Amino acid sequence: MELLAANPRVDPPLRTYGDVLVRLDWDVTLVEDGSVLISEDVTAVELAYVLTKWVEADAWDRPPFEFDSMDDERVGLIAIQPEGNKWRVGSCLLPGDHWPLGSSSEVDCLVLSFIASVVSSTRIACGVDLQPLLSGQVICNDLLN
Image (tube, rainbow, N blue to C red; front, side, top):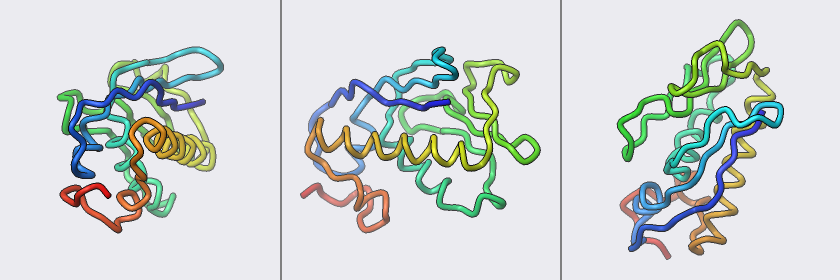
């Protein structure tokens, strides 16, 4: 199972960290066993930001996750739902029985890999280091350096 972000597209200007959250559109793809389950245009930095907060919570206390973007009216475009002691990763665009099932460690790996990819690709695409935002050192209204 993989959650991938590719082809960042910048909608200038990027003045604040908040601009980076919602002015970079990406192709975000959920893949299971080599098959694309969904591929949608998503504000991946915003997704990485909220996933960072979600994955930092204790695995036993994590609530279900539904991506509620400031830029898209569809809630749950990316979603992570508990099922027993495992997690289903999917989307409001997929029937629930098509959502891949993974252990907590597999889902953590998927989420952390996605976040790392977005951080790296954002630095390459527009020269912005997301670590201060993701770690809470800056807020959305802070100007980019």
